[in-house]
Image 1 (cartoon, helix red, strand yellow):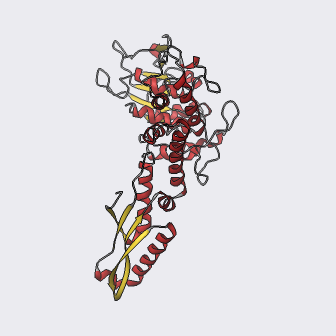
Image 2 (image 1 turned 90 degrees about the vertical axis):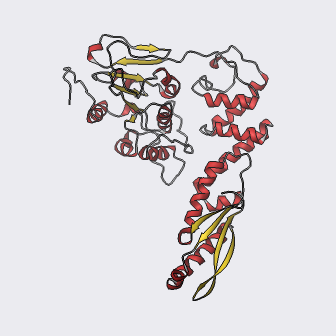
Image 3 (image 1 turned 180 degrees about the horizontal axis):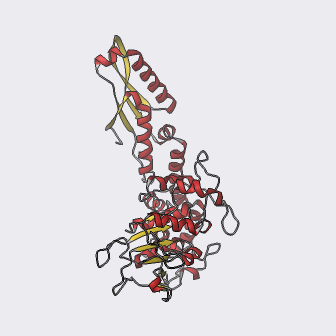
Length: 410
């Protein structure tokens, strides 16, 4: 679409169509080293008979398009068409450069694009890397907050002049950094730093990824919690048919008995790495029985990004209480504060291709970037939702929940 090739748009809705196409273009190309301009649009008008019989309507459409293009600073060309008398109709509209494109799109799309370009400029200016390298790295750090992006620049400066081979991530003497900032759950963050430093690896010594699970079937009530550090498969005659992954430890310990069930403690973003230890999730068991998987996390931006990541890892799972309807039901449990009492920061929504429309709606709400749709609270913690409600929801999905008398509910 960039360059001389024109994209056709219908005259009646040309401004809306152009805005939509340019918005998509900016989103897809915001991390290009040098985005291509112009974007050209050919305006499609109806046939001669329609123009003549509906002349007042098409006059209005033409005038509206001309005025819209003028306000946005778009270049236009005209051609004469007969509408009782010859009339100069808009023939093409050109979005000639970045500044024009930012006037065409809405405020949120413009803000997201500017943020990407500003990050590229920062990397070029502060680390003296090429624009191509800066574009690649800025894209890798797309999900990072402004604070973490700044920390990545500081970390790149440090690793460029220090050898930390053999240290664990938490042993690296980076002043002002959380001990978890370089954990292996942040693979893109590490990769970005390596790219900026021109290194293949930071040479860090890794702690083994581990995953905690406990049986939910009453027949396994006497079995201890499992901690796995290598890929694990259920053995023997056991089929695990129901798996619930939860974010919070209290919820993990409180899950009720479920026939053929397993509860996995995701521990927040740790599950993004540790989910690989359960390669069979979302597949059929040895005897052909499907494994039903539910992910239940906090209703906040992190929780929904984790859900998206789990699905991207290949796990076919439903979410529990992680959509807009659930938020409206439980929002009175919400908070705007982190556990340490500091405010939860708003953020720009990231690409989350594995979220369904209602989950995506909630994600955009709790990111809080758009003041017009920002909810009262940016987080509803998983543990605030009554466990009895979760039991009822799982039961409605057909999960064989066992009550405290060990009678299966149907």
